[in-house]
Image (cartoon, rainbow, N blue to C red):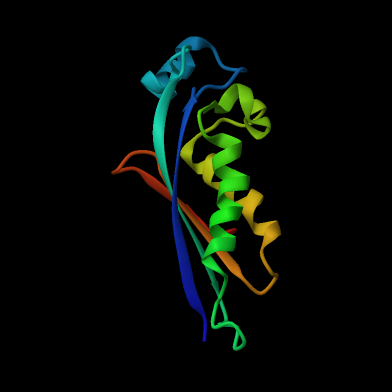
Length: 136
């Protein structure tokens, strides 16, 4: 039996979608107003879900406080109120799309989980636009 435990979190960050190797015109054509050279921001909502067997000793898949502290250290403290392009190492060479942000979050959280636990990251860039990544 596998059970999924989820924790919601929130962070605010600015970014610009563009490729340095493209002209401004091509970036504008592909990324539109998200290519604003002065950046733009989002109020990101994150749902991190951990799936696995219930530990017969504790009754937990994962202690929610452990998950909360992990998200705070690896995501909120790392990305909140940051310019992703300039202040977050991964995005100095990676376009900070919602898809790439979700993968980066997954890669920051997953190494801290037991090997038999699965992770799914759902990242809302807006209330209507979100991406899901589970390591595949």
